[in-house]
Image (cartoon, rainbow, N blue to C red; front, side, top):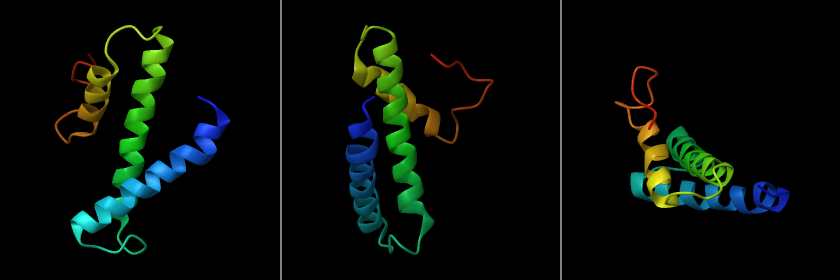
Length: 85
């Protein structure tokens, strides 16, 4: 991914997601850890899906891969004993 994406776009997206989560959770973004932590995890999952999709020559559907990346964040997923596909 380009440096512009990593330095400019990604932090802006993460901030926007964190602000939306704070509003939805009814908490203060600069006090409660949840909005920024969840936003960082969400953007990280999206980045992982994009990176793997691009590395695989963009074969398959990005939304399907993104859904799988978000599944890793679920409490009952993301464990080594579960299938990664």
